[in-house]
Length: 203
Length: 203
DNA sequence: TAGTTCCGAAACTAGTAGTTCCGTATGATG
DNA sequence: CATCATACGGAACTACTAGTTTCGGAACTA
Image (cartoon, rainbow over all chains, first blue to last red; front, side):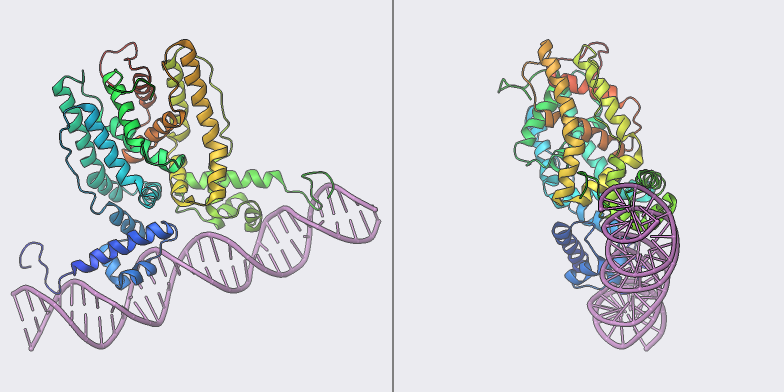
């Protein structure tokens, strides 16, 4: 058995992993999820299909992994104000989802993963939980500052931020420019019950 | 050519349209979009595949049409307050999307329709525009009452409501119960810059 | 050296979207 | 009534794709 995590035989080539992820991302951007084929990914990556299926059980999981890959759970610097933190958060989310290919892939996957418990659990663990934790940090910082009366439901806040960005981009097909600030001001008003400073006009 | 809209030859049977829609909805609920097959729809509906393709150019369009079918643009009674109107609105949206099959189908379709201009235009015209109009009515009523200072961006409000419900159900897999009230109170605070009446705790 | 796992490549299976044709049914037109 | 155009269910058919298996060979461990 050798050392933990070190199996006998030839070890996997990290470059193969990277090539698969890169090819999947490129093709998702070019042809979308429905147009994505395993043969095309293998050809673009210069690997055999066996190498792909050794790593990913199915097309959806591969696309999911390629999309999620590298979405590291950044921590946000304390900007000193709730509005500043919210703006940074909204900009990060809009940046992640601003690429139409990424948001389209996530939509397709959310629709198709369905009740497959393993995938859902993986998705929640890998993506959602760290994000909610980030939201919670920001909210708790604001509560410590006295900007918030009571700690709100972090999952609701997360749903509002992510869902709004998704709908803005994919339902209304509006440009992401300016969305982060609008959304941050909206969130700030909702959370503090007070209009944010600067700009007297509406949302 | 005869009368406008009336072609020569045997006219289409409305019952076939209805059977296709019904079969598609049932199967979407049972097996999801990815598991949906044209042969199964044809068999369940008791029609030939030709009859389906005479009406719908592709599987995605068929599923889309079946999902959207019958989503009439209700008008909401004036409850007398912004919070009441928002609650009614959120309950309606949560009700529409509360069926996991419906929301999953919409997610898949949004992901796959992509840049197909015809489908996007149809979707915007049939679903999104009437909904945004409803939102605008509610917001204008509130402005007339003096509850709102300036009319906010109706498309942003629409994105927040629909996107939040979607994320709540499909990302977090939380039950729709209680979501409408939470969301309405959140929206109310964001729009008016004041905490809604009743219940002193946070969002 | 022996055993295990990896690699690219190719052949293969199984299943689905979408098309085409058949014989028949149905309604409009003359 | 006769004709024409289209719709109908059904079945056969094409083209394509997900996923599996197999191959000779390479890389690593023990």
